[in-house]
Image (cartoon, rainbow, N blue to C red; front, side, top):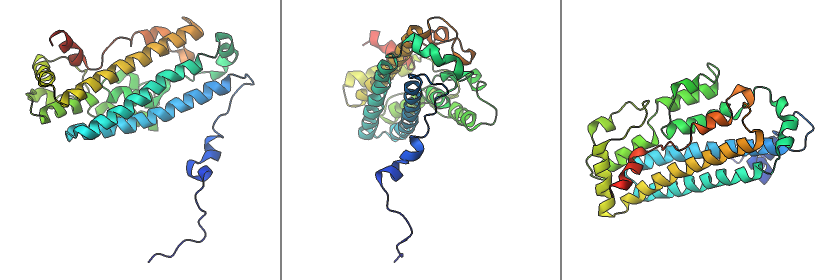
Length: 266
């Protein structure tokens, strides 16, 4: 029987959550009032990106095991988090353009474009672009994590395996595809998806949750673009990024095109 460690302090709310460390992480570089909000919002986004990555990887495991119930539960949590990410834009928009400009120059080269976690999330959801890796320092932990996400199967690949595991005809080439390549439409897969919908089983609920996720991410992108336009107009972004101009190029590009294509065939 182990001997209790009498020197170990009992966990408290503060020590368990490491609140002293967490609440010391907000370090404004100016005296402008709204900079604190700007920092807190973006730190919270990064925490939710961390949870999203955790949940998407778990969802991939559930899908590949054809575990319907746990897959749907994972979708529910991911979609709820995504709604919160969209809602947080409302808070950021309480900051006026003049308020942001009062400290913007102090951000120097810092840019949301450098978020390694969001890039990982994009790659895991299937929007991969090798060139975007180059924006992160060689050998840095963030770059290594992005490179691993680039080489890893996407959520779409896990979904295709789920469809096959449910007994539908999926081309072998899709099950063995190069996961670094863009996701392309496939008519044979669309036939399998149409059959899944027409049988009206719980499996097509997974299809609908995939569409919800795709639509939710597009909504988040749209709100992000409008927030940037509202704040800095058509100026270049911090760190020399193209600002709203680049963000607009990401709009209305579905992650899972087959699930949208079949809508006209149902």
